[in-house]
Length: 101
Ligand code: FES
Image (tube, rainbow, N blue to C red; front, side):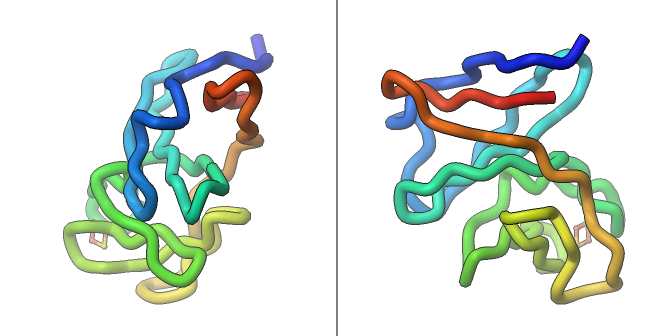
């Protein structure tokens, strides 16, 4: 059932980095882009890399395996093989990061 869930405190994801959380059976990568938090599916469509283990560059998440890049806004691939990954609603409330799946 869809709904909002708190996954971490804002301080747990340093600026420019990502972290992976398991929520309702999905692995979701959450990124901190200068204090703005975004969430996309963790699994890179190229070869299954964990996007949450990557980093932020110019509003995109960079896959740490072969450097495909995905827009933080909507998960669209902008450098690599095309396509993309699903994005999730993400917001900060009371110092915590909340995701909607
Ligand atoms: S697995 Fe992500 S770019 Fe290859």
